[in-house]
Amino acid sequence: MEARSTSSGTVTGGRGTVATYWTAGEPCARSAKPGSPRAGRPVRSGTMAAPEALVSALADADRLHLFARICAAPEGLPAAGVPAKLAKRLADAGLVTVTEDHYRAVPEVFRDALAKAPVDPLDSLFSRGRLVTIPHSGKRRQLLLAHLAERFEPGRLYTEQDVREKLSMVHDDHATLRRYLIDEGLLQRSNDGGAYGRPSEARAAG
Image 1 (cartoon, rainbow, N blue to C red):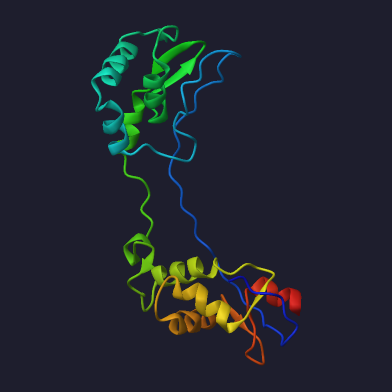
Image 2 (cartoon, rainbow, N blue to C red):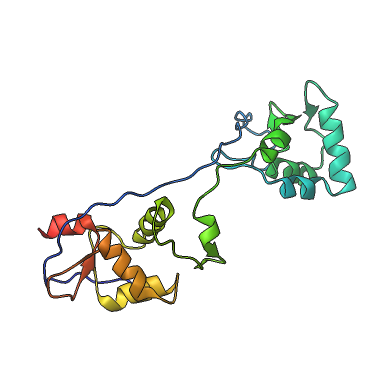
């Protein structure tokens, strides 16, 4: 439940940081000519094909045969006569692209799929979207609290019930998480204890 603005109390200031993670992207195919077939979606920038997705795309005799034909064509395989459904599945996995009405293989997708993506240090703290471990100190604790603070929109005030509901979605001990967020200055409480907000809301209220 989203909180509604309230005029009760004044929230004091604070400061927090948020970490972001990303993976290296695949090069995108050049635009096809108007009217030419679109071979689905190549792997988009900011994503990396998983090895399982590549295996799944090639785990069909017809698709595997088509991919072999594309690989054997240095200048690309003419799109005319190629079953669009088969080619789309290969393109969706990032195995081929279509340029100038020709399908071309993307062999580097295998190398990139096996490359280790940056590891999110918070992954080991969660299971099925629920927090299973709360670090007592250190960098991971700071990252975790910054991550939890993102559940609260800057520029809004929240009731205690709102805070409870949002944090209970992550861990049963919502009171402890709320206290940690307040201790770190990532979540602020009004003087009368009736409202909570992010530091940016504190600045606006001040």
